[in-house]
Amino acid sequence: MSTDEARFFMDIFLKVALQAAHRGGQEILRHIHLSYSIAVKSTPVDLVTDADLASEKAISLMISEHFPSHQILGEESVKPVDWNDYLWIVDPLDGTTNFTHGMPFFCVSLALSYRGEVLVGVIYNPISKECFWARKGEGAWLNGAPIHVSKTEELQKSLLATGFAYDKSIREKNNYREFSYLTNLTQGVRRCGAAALDLAYVACGRFDGYWESGIKAWDIAAGSLLVAEAGGKITNYKGGPLNLLEEELIASNGHLHLPLAEALKDAKNYQL
Ligand code: IPD
Ligand code: CA
Image (tube, rainbow, N blue to C red; front, side, top):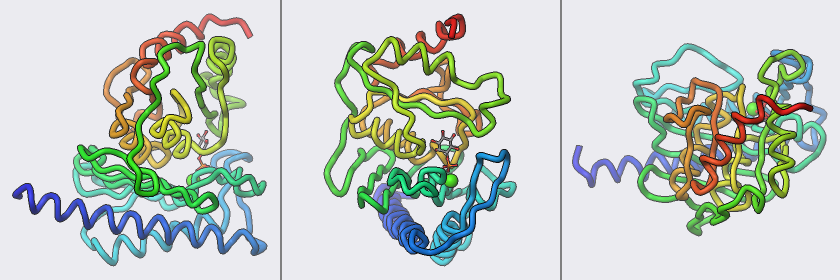
C-alpha cells in the first residue's frame, strides 16, 4: 500500500471512529433522563446499565456498516477475536459507576488496532463535549487543538491518577499500598473512576502520570495511543512494551516514568 493510500484509509478510520464515539455519547446522554436498569457483572460493584448496552450497540452497528470485515471487541459483548486482524476495541461507557451516580466523569473509548498495534484512538466525554483523538505517528488532539504531556520533572510536584479493579476487596494486587505510598510522594493521586479519561488527561498534561493493574484492553487501548502521540511514555509495570492483554500499565509524561515505576516497586514494602 502506498503512503497516500495508507493516509486515505487512516482518514476514513478516524472519521468513522469520531462519528461512532459521538453516536455512543448520544445514547449515553439519552439514558440520563430515563429510568434505565442497572445490573452487576463480575462482582457486586461491577455495573452495567442500559446506557452501556445501547452505546455499544450503536457503535458496533456503525463500525460494521462501514467496515464489515473488521472485528469488534466490545466490553459488553466479549468474544474471541483475532488480534492480528483489524480490530475495534470498544468501551461504550467508561466510568459506569460515575454515570449511575450522576458524576459527569465518563466517556466512550474507541480504538482500532492492527496486529496488536493501536492505529487510531478516540475518547469522548459527552457531558463536557471534550473529544480527544490520536492517529499513530500523527500526534494527539483535543477538540481540534494539538495536545502534549506535561513537563513536570519531580514526583513531588506531580499530580497522578490511578484506579482500582472491581475485585479489589479480594485481589492480592489491590493497589492500596501503591496508592498510599504515591499519595505521600506527590501533590496528590486522583481516583476519578474512568481509566480512559485518566489517560486522556495525561495526554493533555492535566495529570503527570497514571497507573493501574487489573485493567482491560478496552479501558486503555485508545488512551495509550493518546499518551504516546502526545509525547508521553507507556509501559507495563516492568518497563517493557505495553501489551493490551497484560492488564497493567504505567503512563507518564516521560520524565516521571522511571521514578513512578521505581516508586511502584518500593510500595510493595510500604506499611499501611
Ligand atoms: C472502569 C473504570 C475505572 C477503573 C476500572 C475500570 P468501567 O471501567 O475505568 O476507572 O479503575 O478498572 O474497569 O467499568 O467503568 O468501564
Ligand atoms: Ca465500560
